[in-house]
Image 1 (cartoon, helix red, strand yellow):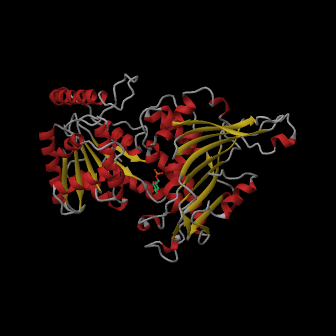
Image 2 (tube, rainbow, N blue to C red):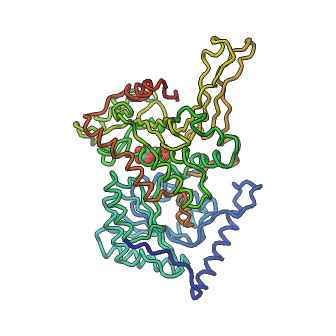
Image 3 (cartoon, rainbow, N blue to C red):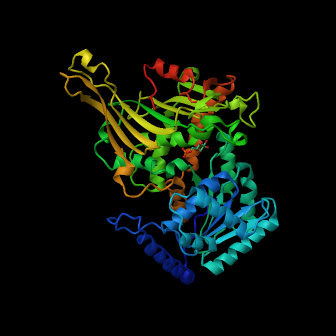
Length: 536
Ligand code: BG6
């Protein structure tokens, strides 16, 4: 496997670099003038330099709902350079204007920030479309030509990010085409990056094979793996909460923490994604990536800096220390939704969804108990759960503390007092809640739980950017800390593979009605430990 380093700008590229610098300065000025900025913030905004984003899979749901709107939102916040260009590539008989229309409609429907005609007009000037199949050499030659022309007309300096928003089975073809056409190789002074979306494989072996394919063409430093949870403000805030404060860290360990619950509950079913979801299931879909990343951020030691290397190393250490339950039958649970009621509507069961085979054994709910074998966490269980068609949409990390060692109250007075908890609400109602006991007014000394709340909406002027805004900007800037390294991907599969292998011997998952909180076996798993899942 070759791992060439990214080239840096030599002196003879001075003109290009100067043009790029001027363009970046203009972009920074525009970003500073953004009326949505907090006026107290005098730092220069992080803005992208001249570049082209090439999007494979423009007709997909992700492009329409997330990527195209995020590009517009970045433009609207003044974070894209004036010559920024967007090239769509897909198997459609489209012209530039057809792609522009699709982008326009997607932006109007899904962008976070208000639609401004002048921002759209500027973006529109840089929109191009190249039709073709991934197997078609001619189409990729046309792509290379188009990019050259864009460099000349829009000053994008040969800097290209290739976003593969396509099923992984097409990665080999596309990556090979980028190699064949020379598009994967940056000329001096320019950069080339490839962005890949999960799933990063189906298990450890396929993840390694997938990596082999990209690493033959792109150096690791040019590969950006998207786990969109890391782009969420609330997820990054776990690092701020833990490492910018002195209040929580002293109690963030086995001496005080009883257990941790990480929940990603969704009210939606699988919608039109049967082709992707069946055979994958809840654990591969979100535990292998989003939930294990959350666990890593909650449990890792403090990194020496927020450099990609330092951050990833700490996450890797903790993922390496994760231990599975000795008895997987007792320490995991699996479920599949049946018909039920949600939001006042009757909804179908998983097996009745379009495209799901009658003999499917795919789980739509998974719960796993993990432990972390290190000094900080020995003996503290981390309970992870996720499911579709649950009671409501909520993602949170709850650090539940041990009970006070002694309660100098009468038993009656503390009868309904729960355990202290610090809850990071990832979504919705983003914020942090601390739950603790308080005296009930008017009683002699009755104590019950109350909450102290921090809500993003109340403390900050600007609404949080979408995860994809942050991640796309980081790709264009070339800032890798929020992108998992291949080593993290492999470590996560090492955790999940034995569980999947065990489940594969167990027949279909247990039923749970849509709109409920999952299968009874998940509650039983907690009850065996004398605990309950948080009510959400
Ligand atoms: C994706 C999963 O990664 O995350 C989906 O493939 C899931 O199944 C989605 O619905 C949830 O993302 P979010 O940001 O809405 O929590």
